[in-house]
Amino acid sequence: MSNTLQTISPIDGSVYVERSFANKDDIQMALEKASSAQQAWKKTPLAERKAICSRATDAFVAKKDEIAHEITWQMGRPIGSAAGEVAGTEERARKMIELADQGLATIKIADKPGFDRWIQREPVGVVFVIAPWNYPYLTAINAVLPAILAGNCVIIKHSAQTPLCAERLVEAFKAAGLPEGVFEYLHLTHADTETIIKDERINYVAFTGSVPGGEMVEKAVAGRFIGIGLELGGKDPAYVRADANLASAVDTTMDGAFYNSGQSCCGIERVYVHESIYDDYVKQAVEWVNQLKLGRSDNPETTLGPLVRSSAADFVRAQTNEAIKQGAVPQITADDPLDKAGSTYLSPQILTEVNHNMRVMTEESFGPVVGIQKVSSDEEAIKLMNDSEFGLTASIFTTDIDKGVELGQLIDTGTFFINRCDYLDPDLAWTGVKNSGHGCTLSVMGYESLTRPKSFHIKTEL
Image 1 (cartoon, helix red, strand yellow):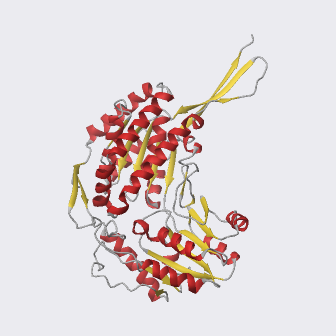
Image 2: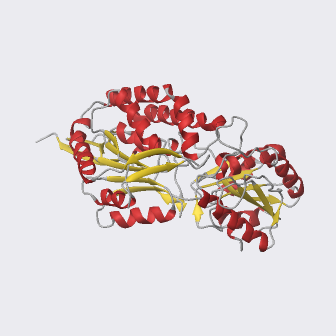
Image 3: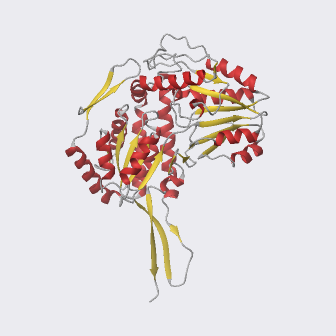
């Protein structure tokens, strides 16, 4: 195996980044530095940790233009929307800094004569963050920043598709005055990633990626009795009820399906529409999608960029073509010359006459295709929404909020939306059920997995 990491840009197939993989000495040094630094870092007052994290956020945002350009070339997001990731990362960082006092607060137990009792939050130690390419900063910051605020040290391994993201994050924290060893990055092979997970100096693993990747993490930590957070795949559904605001539902669901070329774990991948408005919904959805402009990500006019690699695009092509052979009806004419076998560029597609015998309605697509299925009742819609191995988010579009909440109680999902989708509110817990993973980031609850409770039971009267 080569000892060099190469990032192939999906824009033109060029080598955009080239780095050496960390060698055994690099890995051991990073682990030792993190383990040693953590003892002093956990004693640093929370106010000082918050100040450093705030300055790091400032330093990160100050380079938003360069960062947006790098995102575009590394993973293919259109330049017109790449800067949005910087803004979202800042929002989450600021919110977790704001919530740190509450999330890390000591729990004082009710008075008991002759005793003083409390529970405090202790850092777990060294946190290993394995971050993906599709939202390389948004996903990483969910674990990195609260881990550091909680008094942990962090080693981050980013996807080989987005190695500059790890470098930029560490650079921002070092510019903010973070002590050496508290936050470091390593460019790693899969084998070395697994070796680090098994190392006794790692106390928690935060992984975002595929279901097979999550299985690898679980196997690697087996018998170590450490915590893991797994944010895995999704096949997120939306249900458009008969009473929905149709124009808003179309705009929101289609944006949720095709933003980032459909490469979002919580993007809309299947839509169920009540039969009374089905035809109008499909007509407006087709009009919406036909306005997308497929093209190079560095072109400001592009609204639909390439997929991250040609194999990903070919997978979606195969899934779509298989559904069509099974009876699905394509609603979009895919005649763009950029869209051809072996290309990263893939035209958007809406499929109707779909059902759950088709992979496109049950298997994660992670591309610019969405199936729209007609339903006759709320009961049918809920049954189909729950008919999935995944459970990350689900959305219902309705003007009857009380009924929507009632239906939301019946859906197996980590986050439930009404009249919106594909958004992480940092005040709310981000979590999944079934094969979408387990664990929690964001909100005050996001601090729980990155700390451990320590009880103090003091007898004051002898």
